[in-house]
Amino acid sequence: MAATLFRRARLATLADPAGGLGLVDDGAVLVRGGRIAFAGPAADLPADAASGAEPVDCGGRLVTPGLIDCHTHLVHGGERSNEFEMRLAGAAYEDIARAGGGIVSSVRATRAASDDSLLQGALARLDRLIAEGVTTVEVKSGYGLDLPTEARMLRAARRLGAERDVAVVTSFLGAHALPPEARGDRGAYVDRVAGEMLPALHAEGLVDAVDGFCEGIAFSPAEIGRVFDAARRLGLPVKLHADQLSDLGGAALAARHRALSADHLEHCSEAGAAALAEAGTVAVLLPGACYFLREERRPPVGAFRRHGTRMAVATDYNPGTSPLTSLLMAANMAATLFRLTVAESLAGITREAARALGLLGDRGTLVAGKWADLAIWDVEHPAELLCRMGFNPLHRRVRRGVPS
Ligand code: DI6
Ligand code: FE
Image (tube, rainbow, N blue to C red; front, side, top):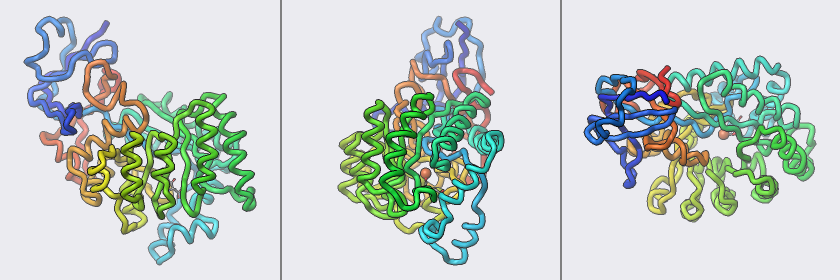
């Protein structure tokens, strides 16, 4: 089996049980069959283990796990810079949404877009993420809100993983907003999401997890609960847009359903933070949306630390509230806006992002047995990855052992 030895590497394994970066100054990563056979101090590599392996000299560069963006809406039609201008003039996001803009305006554009334009638009955005060392990305539906368009979005998401060397994980977000044709009949729409759309999309193999938007302008905890019950009947994991603009008890709802993650959480209470920790539900922080909406509330990072709630960080790329295609910038904002440490921010876009997708068993840290997904950086110190803005120091990205 072909083997490669990445040598003279400064590793940040993210595998430190105490939550640190797991730094190894003179490190090596041995890869066999696309998986990590060894990662650690070069001096600990058994002398004969790497015989015959093709050497790759990392020149003392920092090597981290490949980055993971665990919350994106990469597939959509149209763009929403008009709403940006309206908000600059003083309009609130919720007012724009109630007046028929917001998510529903992206729904109109997505329904009108061809399959090819959905794919090409998403590829252009995905390429920005990949250029920064992203090796796994989650992609949601939720701008179709009818079965044919939700299916087209999820098929486009699957295609992304065939067109590019990246792992794509899909989430069905039928409970994102009430579509105009539902004419206020919320119950009938939620029934359709849970009883028709989800089973059909799942039968086509398009759904890895089920997401929902629990908010005053979207769906109530009871409505989301019905969608989550349907997910459980199909054996699918769930996650939730929770407590972003108000506290509807979204974190507790996610915890009750043993969700993989609860995302946003600016308005999450202390009890919500505790419930997430108890359930093992990851808090996914999305500072891009917080920044772009000029939200003044911050997620309760102190409470997450006190209770031992795991924290991931993602771009939440979407055309309305977080048009951000830089995961490094998201990590910078998590540090500057939310006061995460360098170790927390970097873990947030690697180890904890893998956990938030239920994939920590095979990626997210540099540990023997996992996929050899690596990012090799032209920096010496991990803090350099986060502190500079609009700066991409990626030297090489490695997926399943193959450098690109
Ligand atoms: N993620 C979402 O899904 C909503 N907010 C967020 O941060 C709405 C996105 C949109 O306005 O299109
Ligand atoms: Fe989102």
